[in-house]
Length: 593
Image (cartoon, rainbow, N blue to C red; front, top):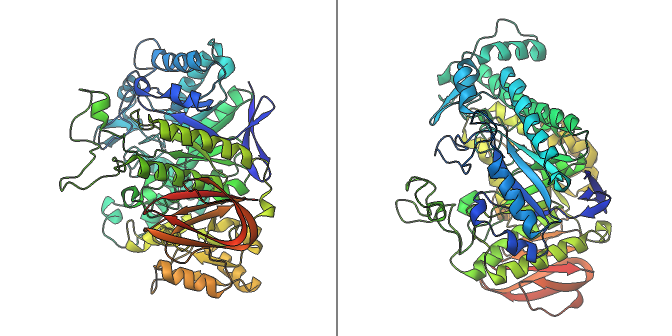
């Protein structure tokens, strides 16, 4: 089986053995509780299967891990957990496409034998993402595991790979602090000499990262920590790609520069690998803002439009909680402490681990995630973490309809339909201009959140791409008060091109939804609805997520035939303006023709 990313009508799709497939998939951490059969009956054929070289925690703070069998924890490799899950899927669906989601994290024996290549975490020592020994030995184990897959009787159903690592599998440093240790000085010194021609480098003091003041050496180490993670990911992707003769797509979690503000996590090096020939897709979850409260957009953690510009695909993890979501301790009784990953906090308030109270709100949440990703041309894997979250006939019926809608999108030419007229710029290097956790670093997330309720769809790019895309937009939003050189250059491009722009500054770092909407509409940007609802529109589809009960009026840029798809019973009509009566926090989806 061979696979690659192919663009059709500007949408990235997966070409598998000559046939195009819209990227819609299912996965779960707890395979024994997974609803593979439900998704197969609903027409899904893509499945991510989780596996790890170790059963050590994926979350070093909570100590949580879903893995029961670390492949390389015993004297001889144990592939049973992975193989049995693949067999379970293929028994139900012989024509399934399997994507191993491999966590390249080292087993206990390696940790014990290489103490100088490790970092300390709350749950024990783990491999440093800066370690050359980790790169070498991790590559050996990766190839050994893939060799097993290639010799297995299911090899012909493997359609691609996802490479994971670091804490929470998302390539954050295991210590969440730049793999900071005396051992890292050697690599940091080499990097400083090569990049800045600076000799006699010393490590910053730990207090330099915590005292709330800008420190150049701490900033440089943060830059180094991000660039090294990016290069670590590319190293494993290159080794894997070459080992499989470039026959299949390879992707990774990375690039959360529109959400994460701490450069010591290592996530702000996307610009180094966004064009890598070895990485075909980038992934992140939907944003966890405000504990996934309904009534707001769950935005993208990474600049998905830049990823697409660089001919890559975004495959977004939609781990949407529902009324069926329960404690993981109830899915695997007796295996986890009762005090981790709780549904409610000590005051009885819901946490991000809980879902909506009703099936109707659960459907709305799923629809909202779907239409967001559909209008951004991103793929989806529905992440049923502990299993059973979607085991409801109404939910599965809609997920089946969503698959049909997504497949129909392949044949729609986006040039025939309204597109976002606003660009929001992300400047990942600019985080380095401020101390860690400075409130001004929150401007990116704050402004992106405020934009979500303006009633004005927008695209999101890295500032490094400004020259290629600026001409397409009526207005620009800059989200960082102390921009990088690339950010400053993007502002100058706006000035020269006469494109109106709004700039976050130290004096005015944040903007309300109303301020953003007023600026944009005063400069000719079309607003679909000015009542605070969340509006998605691109590629011939429109989504409405309501803030309150009542009538919602949608003003289109021009007349189209509006066809209701999900969440509404509005009659099909040809119009440039339509209204729907909608309940609070409901989501309705329409197609334009």
